[in-house]
Amino acid sequence: MALKDRQGRPLVAVTGMGVVTSLGQGREDNWAALTSGRSGIHAIGRFPTEGLRTKIAGTVDFIEVQPFCAPMLSERLAMLAAEEAVAQSGAGTKGDFPGALFIAVPPVEIEWPQREALAEASGQNEGVTYPDLLKAAATGRFKPWHDLFLFGTVADRIANRFGTKGSPISLSTACSSGATAIQLGVEAIRRGETKAALCIGTDGSVHAEALIRFSLLSALSTQNEPPEGAAKPFSKNRDGFVMGEGGAALVLEDAEAARARGATILGYVLGCGERGDGFHRTRSSPDGAPIVASIREAIEDAGLTPDDVDYVNAHGTGTPENDKMESMGCMAVIGERMKQVPISSNKSMIGHTLTAAGAVEAVMSLLTIQHGRIPPTLNYRVPDPAIPLDVVPNEARDATVGIALSNSFGFGGQNTCLVLGAEPKGLAA
Image (cartoon, one colour):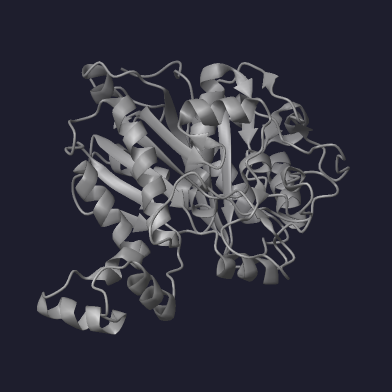
């Protein structure tokens, strides 16, 4: 009989992980940096910041794409993360991945004038304007350059590179997108539609327009000096999030199929919870009901109770309202015990990787379980009395973590939570 979870569904195992952030490329570099409390947030050098209130970000500057644009960098980050994850999993053969692709990509596409400038700056088809290229593409006389600058085609190129099966699913649910991609992979395996899924979150969209838009929402930290001190999740003196970039990929498999082929299982996605909030396009509902519901649903979906949660990898953006609402949500579900459950925010070191965040933090949660070591929340020196949590401050903490809750809450009320775990006990077989 197939290995089942506590709900009688196929158990979903993780057999491969890959990650790229401003801290470095690959699991080892990122984990070493996170657990040593090193920040990847720095002064922006990609574009001029004179006159801007925010001048810092966790940009991935060690990976170049030419000509630079956010879709191309996002694709490159996704490609590198997926290469690492697929290689670790050993699933299928090169270019023949035995499952579906679910990829979270940023929602904003660059404007037509910028596309034209990028096409001309590429140096190809010299003397031909972007409108000419589009017309020529329709007759087959030139390569259709427009698809290089569209987020929607990133999924197609990733699918072609890895040979995933079926139509690739490209999605965007704001800052919960990476977690949503994982959720869709879990659900597809549970329904028996596929034995494996490649789930990716990617975001390389730190550019002037995006920075200014977030700044106009008063969402960004303006504490530019020193850059590594700006992100202060759960601190009383927090003043906003810091933009970041990154990509992460997970190979999910039906646990029985993974064991049958001799795969090394790195952990399990035990539960997923999702709840929408139509209260406001940027603010959370004042009663926190959708956040509470998504946390509770994830734990129940895993067949667990709140008392089973050993650690919370927080959404933890560092914005005044979001941190307060997350604290309220966790307390509402886990109760007074939440004051003793360690919680930390990776965003204090890598910034908010936006569309990629849910996938990046799922990888970090699984590494926490594997290594028995909780990455710290950097810059936590002024506790907020309104947030009575066990925030892991400034230095990593050794702890046995069997069950981790990873929270992802996005603009527009997109809330997705994942329950990740080590080897489950008491499974039906």
